[in-house]
Image (cartoon, rainbow, N blue to C red; front, side, top):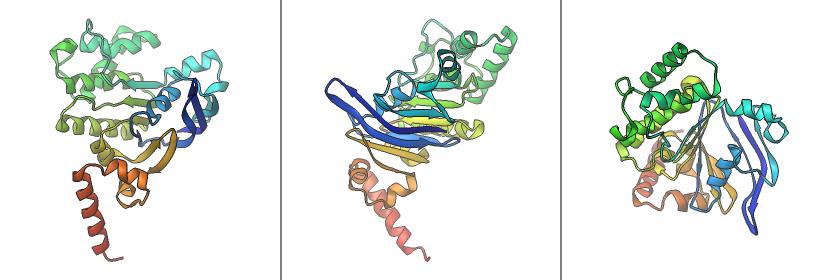
Length: 259
């Protein structure tokens, strides 16, 4: 579990986060959504320790990040997996080498142990025949699966994903969403996803944080989005005619179900 209490962050005269408080739950897909400039990227970077909040606190299973020593912060980083927006794979490394990189950096495992773990996670993301391929030789969807494999290879407690569906077609996006959700549940990870993809919200949004102008404007589940009367989230999510129709159909059906 990650708990955020009254986080504030400014850059010069611009106040980006204005007292955001929330809890990201373990074993669930926690989504951060909002328009460009809402503060969601700054919030994610604050969770990762890239930005230092001006005030407030971030705690990882009771460990307040600002209170940790350098060694404790280094240890915490080994418990974090990250899936970057553009996958961020090393072009000159094979798939196998990319996935094994964190183990070589952060563990003292033998070569055999590293190979065993790499084989396991590549099989888990359905890439058993891609070991010796370079990133340029595989599709965007496969690159994203390699990025997920690399993120989980070190058995993280916390998984952060920045726009994991960026640049992917709808079918591949759904596959990636489902893979992240399955891994989150299977390994009981606290997963936080920064996304603008409303299909992801509707597919895997178990705990959704909606930011607007640096404030938490709404929080709930994908089911609660259909019935909320919060004008900000309704305007944001249902700007698409397709989602408007889905919501109208959901509300119509819910009224016909006997209590």
